[in-house]
Image 1 (cartoon, rainbow, N blue to C red):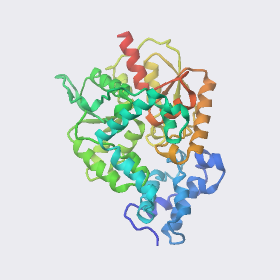
Image 2: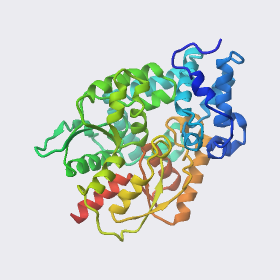
Image 3: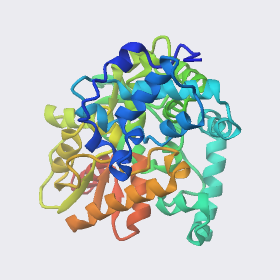
Image 4: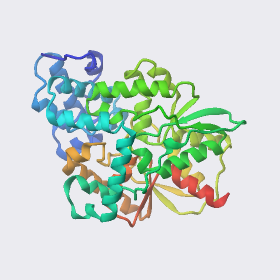
Length: 406
């Protein structure tokens, strides 16, 4: 049958792979299994077989693609610059079109609809907060286990979306902050630090009320219609701002690729910055202060969609140094921690193995604080390391240090 949608991987994307194999040692699933079908090269070969009409979009093809974490570590090692992330998203949209199973439909309902509903997310957060206080997650019941990796959720739920505008007559630029879906009620400290630092650096900051979920989870799971609908809404919500700032690596990476998802998305993508980019630039410009050193070591875990998708590596370390910490590299190669959105639910064994390995790398450093710029990674680390080690966003650590010293 071949491809049936316009979102499918193109011939140019698939032909870019020269099967050199340089991606293999950087792929988490290949490292764990040694299976060619679990490698980027193998997955691209499977896509090419569909495009050529040699194979069909069947259960085997679905399993080959679904087992991918979409960490995109292969992209940073690829001499041919294969757009693997784009090809994976297109191929998963094809799976949705040709194999609309009930399980996939339910996942798309969650990542494409429920997470985009602000009141449902708040309601869910309240229920999770109550479960946390009851200690239900300690019973080890399946889907409730990730609660062990969450921060303590607030009651009642308050979110950054309630902030309309922080006006400043001397502001040198207007910045909009992406509230996100679960990022907003679950990681309020990160939003507070982001808004506080932007205002301190001279920005006029707004959290637009009309915005919605960035759509990254929907795009990664093949819910193309939902991803496009969310992108269109955000293109409107964020029009007129000089910068659009996201403080979750997965969100900023997806926003920067909005040219694939909505008309007008290219303009928005050009204005998107991860918060670590903005703060590092403001530090370099002297609009944010460098604090006293000597606060100790902080282990740095690089989220895949910061390191590989956006090539942002130096900025989080520069921010930690400015805060007075000594950054310690956990894994210079940036192997995935295994969180990967809904992957930890779909493939818990693989996710847990990668999480344990990442936790072991942190433990070797002997540090008690880990900096991670993505919520899923933070939850994965905390779940595998326990309460003895604090996991926080680099922005939070700098903001807290600034509050203490200035």
